[in-house]
Image (tube, rainbow, N blue to C red; front, top):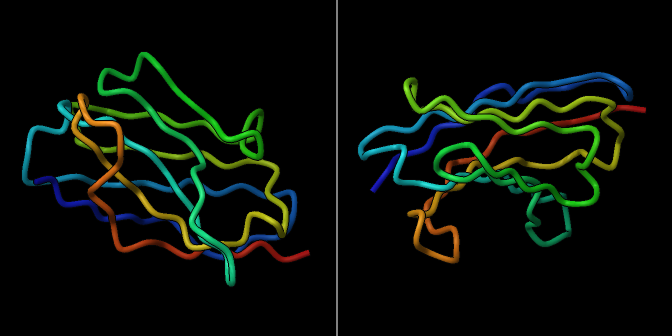
Length: 119
C-alpha cells in the first residue's frame, strides 16, 4: 500500500496561511483518492477535505469551504492543502489519508503534522 508523509505544519497567527503537503510512495498514486483529516485535543478526528484520484472532484467540510483548497499532482505523487484565513479553531493535528478509488473508507494514514493557530 502507499506510504504517506506529511509536511508543512507549524504555528501561525490568526488570519494567516499555511500549506500542508503529503508525499506518497510505494504504490501507484493515481489509484488513490486522497484526503485531509484533523484531530484537535479532546475531539474526534474529522474530515477536512478530499480529492478524487484524477483531481477532478474535490470535497470540503463546511468549516473548510472558502478557506482551504486541496490539490494533487499525480506526476509528483503529492497532495496539498492550502489553508487561508486560519483561526484558533483550526488548531489540530492534520493527517493525510488515502483510499483506493473504489473503496468507501480511507484506510491509509500519515503520521500527522501539527498546526497551531494563535489568537
